[in-house]
Amino acid sequence: MKAVYLLVLAGCLLGTAPLEVVLHTRVYARWRRLLLTLLPVFAVFTAWDVLAIRAGHWSYDPRQTTGLRVGNVPVEELLFFLVIPTCAILAFEAV
Image 1 (spheres, rainbow, N blue to C red):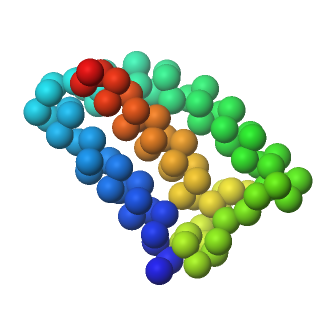
Image 2: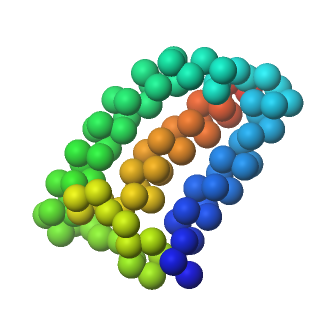
Image 3: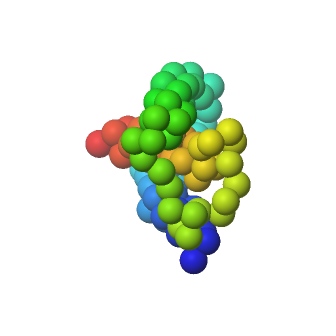
């Protein structure tokens, strides 16, 4: 299945959505704050991925991804750097 990675990311977002709606964490409502938190994470881990892929330290199974890439990094991996920290922030704010 070509979209497994995207489905996992969607599941993570769906799983944490009730935290915003039911517990009123206001993570999405304070989008500027969220963006300022995500930008450094995205920059550092994207650079790390680019270098690691280039060096041959890891790769991605084309059967699990859509095949869309930005440079040598799959789009799903770039989304991972936005989705997973967002889910973590939602969980943290809920607690």
